[in-house]
Image (cartoon, rainbow, N blue to C red; front, top):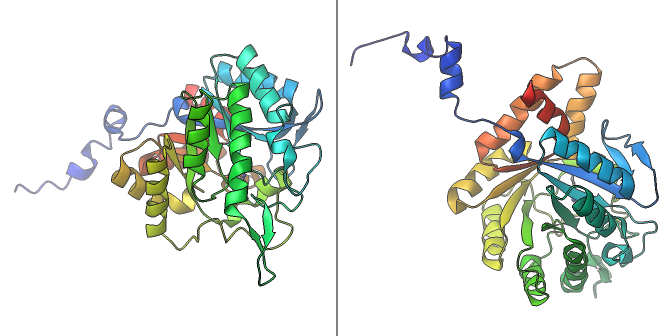
Length: 329
Ligand code: PBG
């Protein structure tokens, strides 16, 4: 071999070559923008734990949806807050709740936007857990997997009836993808897809979201249903189960501390793969930017590129609107 010490950087020295040989390009088509929908009208209030994100009434959510479309964002995911929480999270499956109402209005006013909905009970339950609580014989309070499934199925059907394109179960109950798929098919919703939070870790990075959704568990934690951050093989097993049960897209959450999991899942399953760039990841950047410690634009684009490079086709991110603007510059 001829030794050529300049070879590693010859192409890097040239702007056109850097552009030509760049391996990963993050584009606005990859983004899903989350909205937090609340009861009421003409309500828009910044969420203190997530600068730049808002609680929006249904009418305001539709205004925001139109802005997203104008920025070239093609899809939204809706989270809802109820007017009142109760142990069974009843407003989660109320057809007149903020999420189904917002789906209907957005589908009518901005029909070219894809609308996904979060399917979970934690925003709606008074105890803040993602399911129905049962006391075991030993006197322990646990989430009852199978009772919860019935309610999640109801919630998914209400969202599908409202016009959701994809439902996104985020609860981590066993067998919920299969149960939801069967119920959707049974009601003629074969075209409604399932974005499964397949590998969702029990993570400190959800902190700011729990303030936004007022969904911090009132007792215990989510370790009995969300995954241990130490586990890798378990993530592969979880994804396999969801793929077998009919998930259309599998998601890893959070993103940044779990890029190895994302890459492994993409390689092993070669399936449409999503990553959730969660609230803690977002707010760390926002707060550092507010303090002038970082270059926000450069950092956000680096983060999003890294998530895509690791294997995500779809990135749920609170940065979507700003990133879409930056990508146009
Ligand atoms: C649960 C849910 C959570 C998030 C999305 N769906 C919170 C949790 O599991 O506690 C977190 C999203 C984020 O942190 O941005 N329905």
